Length: 315
Ligand code: RIB
View 1 (cartoon, rainbow, N blue to C red):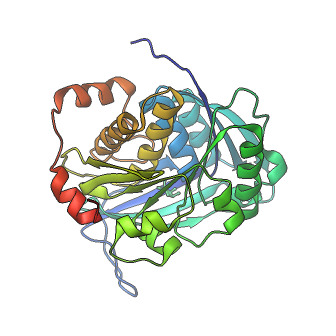
View 2 (cartoon, protein in one colour):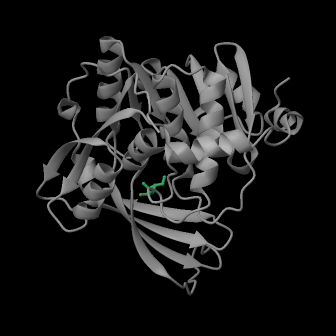
View 3 (tube, rainbow, N blue to C red):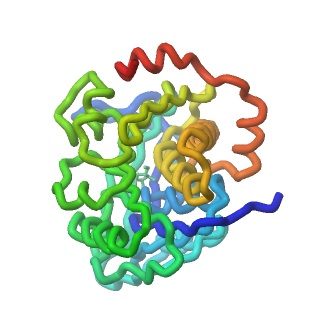
């Protein structure tokens, strides 16, 4: 299928090799769990989002990333190139490639610890030229000062700045002021606002033009100015939720870069992330553009919108 590639997306962020152990449940603090299968998968929030943008979203995508001079970098580069992502690689000689330790439970949940390594060396001046870039997509696995500088540079250049504020942390006001679209899950939303249990109120409290909240198996909601949008989830049997949020972010930004209305972009992002949860591996699980199309064509009305509105406390 021929894909229209209208806008151009630059992702600046992390790349990790994920070391994944499957186990009956995620260990509690102090607990040792005897796991089963072990495997490695290309991961890292920045790289996952770039793969999702290019593959599930069909958008022209570049990625600024840092890799160590080691064997762990090889599958990461191969996965990105295979997905059609153009790469700006900063090669770091005195830090290893980033790694993540993922415990994946039989219910598809996970617990992740990241050793950032080379990702921690990405500096403000590593940002490539923004000529032709319509959207810059950022996360928080690279140094905060760099994320803030990249956001401000892109804002000044007229590109839309999209921040996935993950992993959860508080953010400097100067960074938020440079963001056009903020994407968070419920925990990240609470960490940013201090508001618990009232998603509508928390979204309203953020001084960002557009806020998107991912809600796992419930779907997602958004505030664009004063307009509210709700998108129930597509029903699936979750095998691996690692990178589901990243697939959502990449697919959302891809759709927006191609000029789709926000509600359409949310629906595409929910469909892509639902499919990603049915497969193992953060990048290996990202569906193709055509697979997303097929799910969208097959599914008439996902989920119950009234339940989602009540959960989010949106009228
Ligand atoms: O969001 C999932 C990702 O978080 C994993 O791929 C892991 O590398 C960590 O960055």
